[in-house]
Length: 367
Ligand code: SF4
Image (cartoon, rainbow, N blue to C red; front, side, top):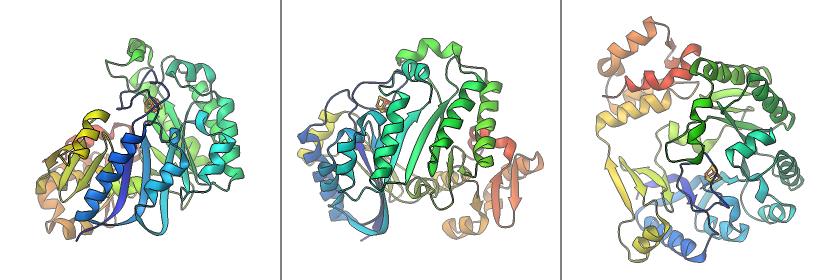
């Protein structure tokens, strides 16, 4: 039986939809039937795979709308490795003193707070429900309860945003001394309420400069950029997210959750009712794509290059029993010659100037 170490659990409920959000979530209260189906789905997979969890990630949606006892109920379905990283994504408005007290009774040991900005006007434009004052209290309650492994999210490239606004939020963020910071460049899909403000997003060169400023600022303040958009204090890299970039197997549970196992990428139905019905009737609740050997080689490269350590030539050769220069020599040489990629000992990495335009480089690695 194959052993799986990484688990993603999707909680598709939010208090209300944010103005920029195109993730699958419903503006409703978490309800029991969802968790009954979720637990059934987990048990079904447990017949096929041995799960010894090294990471569990509750993502959403807003997982912090769920009672901690319900989250612990789900956690207790898994056999956990020592030091299993268990992350809860949380909206600062839900992190009250009572909620945090209850969280400290569970095995959750990492909280990722959707802060996004330290300017209330920006939060309002984004349609976030919280104000900056709630971020302060959320962090205080978490730390009072011994939860110090806190990650804060920061969004940039917002409509009307000036560099001074971004630097203001950055200053505020590091004053909170989180061990991890994730950054996101805002992108607006056609179907979101904020789409009409797309024209007010600063030009690409300005947003590229924002990215560089964030990176320089955080590195100067003792954060390590271990992935294109993720920064941490030493030893606090997200183990769960690293498993994605290392092309490890993981199982995703819940509506719209995705997983990768046995060379299959699957995505569960992004519809709570359809998902619950399928699981309850023991029917297939996902669509899936089987990855060819070439797909896996390409994914290994473009996911791995996201990490500042890049990819190891030797590991590639071991994984695919193939020489990376035979498969990708032309593209690698092209980017190394133009100084967009760097070879360092056994590793291939992004050069500094490539970080913000990495997607263009990655697309050349699709076989
Ligand atoms: S809280 Fe997150 S998932 Fe929910 S609507 Fe806002 S951005 Fe989307």
